[in-house]
Length: 356
Ligand SMILES: *Cc1c(COP(=O)(O)O)cnc(C)c1O
Image (cartoon, rainbow, N blue to C red; front, side, top):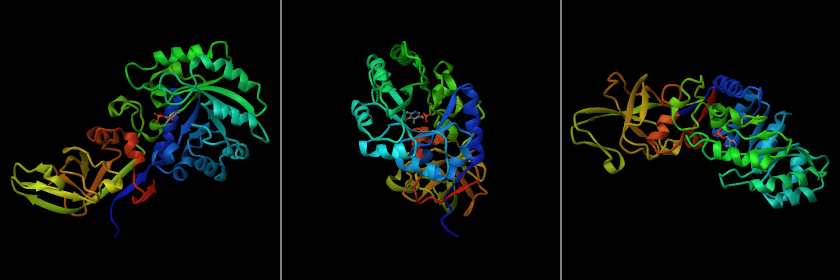
């Protein structure tokens, strides 16, 4: 028997989540965002379950080429475009759509020798202030790109800084309207939060990521609890040790937890080297033998401890769900001061993965 930690990926849930995102933005086409190795789920493992999508969006040229080699013939969008002009022959060869967010990229496109024009997503900075052109420059850039023989179809693109908050999308939408004034061209604006909660942003192409994997763009599971979205990744393990504490006994590094009474605890084969967040607080939810309980003490590299008070029948070999169907990754993340995105992406390479 090997170490019992395991991630299982529910491909049916992924498929259904895509259908839910599509229904939420009926009329728009869908870029399934699979950057960061499909948010830690494994691009090669999951892309086929998403083949009902209209296109795949990502960051990494190698991942885009992998999809082509696996036989995906539909659109592929590189969300940050090319990082250097010498990548353009590969965009040409593999027929990739590029985002364009900086002057140097436009120059590089102008100077490239291509077999056929490349489709372009012209990125507007609508207040995130990471990538993109100021709205007032967009009209003239659009005209310039339209005149270039290396440029095919042009779509306006922007990315929201807080579509999941109450401030929402109103201010960025005004800037995007300003940028798009007088331009008759398609738009792609919506991330998961905007796809689910802001229909006025949908336009031609939406770009959901996190909801495909069944976690909440806001970090709060209750915000998506009624949508039918299902967690795709389950991280599970087993109890490999049991300790009977007396009042005053401490658990783990730094003695971050101390028993106030006699208490039975279980040691689970999962730690921060598997991707479980080290700073998860005492009481972070865990499912042991189907019963909700919580962590006690610091998370170690290879182990964590759980309170067995609510599940006295549990012992060595008992099944533990760290996150998944019952224990929402959003809740574990919240207990560690982060979001589900980070935990998914941080699943460690040493964790074996199976698809179901
Ligand atoms: C990551 C990303 C998305 C998807 O974001 P989610 O919040 O996961 O839906 C969409 N567009 C761009 C440009 C991105 O970088």
